[in-house]
Length: 287
Image (cartoon, rainbow, N blue to C red):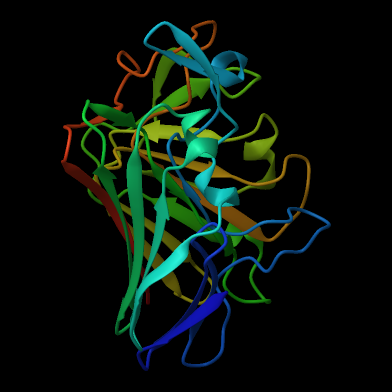
């Protein structure tokens, strides 16, 4: 089921399958979300829960038991229900069941809310712990964008900037896209080039709460602000010339190379007390 939201400056569409953003158009009809072209990548803007990124061995432990966990978790391949809906907003809901408990040992309710406000789309994940013990999670987002924003510009006409960065560092990933622990200074941003992604994703920390994409030829911008998501990744299909960019705000990095993570000790995992709630979110503004 796809829900359409409108608020003058923007029109957004979100799908109950994966609670994912499938379209974002401005008043001129320009589409900003990657449109499922099978030749480069078949998906669009998945919600990452209960984990972001890969885990060493494809599994995680808790309470002495090992749980298989797919890349980016299971929310992006789950069908949500529509909990609330209006002209400018929608809330999708996913509740734990026997299938989720087989891979993730915590009772939960996950709500994903989209809301439009002028030229800004707000997206929020609310994680409710419906169990009697502490819950751990590492949520994030995975939106795919058409970059550059117009047909006349080239990929290298676009730059990514970190306007609020404090001490930006690139987190070096292994060939399996796992955290090596190595960090290098990243500066205030970078110019896009397809060759940047020859070894898969670029991951960063210390970039502040804002990332701004700028197409220098046209001056068009996209600003992504986030909270509760201190890490951010950028990705596109390796060795391709696809006009797309995946932006991945995450609460935690992918798992550590050579380490079978445990939920209770996974770096940056969010802890939610029994009966409690945790929220993370981002906004996408078009300028």
